[in-house]
Image (cartoon, rainbow, N blue to C red; front, side):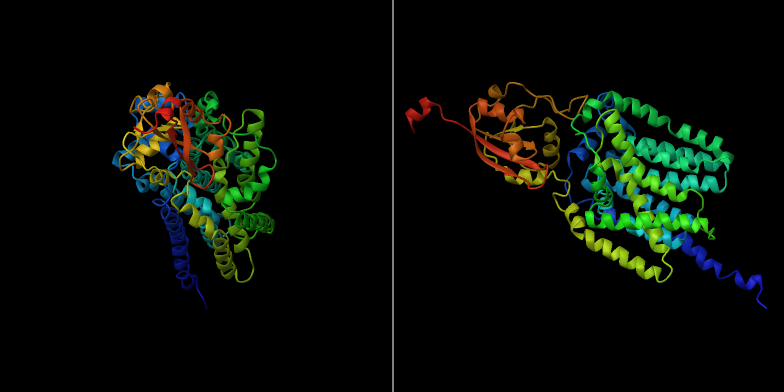
Length: 498
């Protein structure tokens, strides 16, 4: 006769699998993110991180009162991080770690909702997303926001599973992290409300309210600085057609995962209705669907009701939900789920391999300053003028040889209230002693050479220079490098060579 004692030992390997699986998936996702940290050159947003974090605490506070106030918690963290260096790899390493943390909690959340298999597949899908490769090697707070969001859903599941005081405190901390990592990450929080029920409503509301305090503070700061995002265009319902590509990083993979996500939500709901053992019941299918779909819908609503704010990268926090729902769908396949999981992961990687290659190229962030430096063949007494003042921070970061004279620059420190630099306004006088001037701007050739898009270009022309060379980095918006040479005056033309 079989006894309970004889049944106990086999449970140990299963326990080890439950414990080790999240760590394996965290390692996989972290390696995927870390593999791109030193390839692509820093872009303007990442250089803004360097500029902000390199200031004094008082200087960061001054900056936060004018621009990027909602990034202040991240800038504070990076302020201490950059004391050890500002190499590309070092700047991006925290984001890779954040991706690993997100994968760990995603794998364990999948286990709690369905099975170890579901968590592992969801985390594996998350690891192969091109968006993970991009934001996991990006010196901004988007990977932090994704990790905080996954933590918040994981902590809420634990608190509802056993409503102890410490678990509600952890949930409140997780919500505060969501609010502190990126202002628009809070758009996932309404999905939590699907889980509110009478027995825990008071404690859940208290934890949620306490955690949202940073969002209120940062939201008020951000509203006062909305002029800083005036460049964002108004968007319409067409963004929904682009949303799969935005979340996954490529259209083919995004469509595949959205189909699986719908199936995953439906299968989780069906399993909950059957009361399958180990499957999360109640509203969890709606919670995960809300995690995926509420942020873009709410961001679009804010854009139309308050001010245009719809930017794709603000919605990276939805990528874990997409991966988890796809993992739930594959794990629920009745026969050969492991084979199906391998097929989905390999197919997904095949559909996105080019995007993974692209984000790891030198121009993977679409602002290739080392390329621009190679184009500039400076001669003695050449001058340089920047179409956007803040561009010079990138040239300062990457320049390792003689640069043209920065004739407009009047100080080494950036503006206290922004990322530009103080400049002379009299371009003609600044170029009086120079016959060649390099003009660099962010954008296409057309944006600077036609119309009145780049003021500095027209001012250089009015100073007596004509276009001699123009090159663009190839991807949009990219960088344009031009060379202008001084036109000979009629008197010089009549005199001829000496």
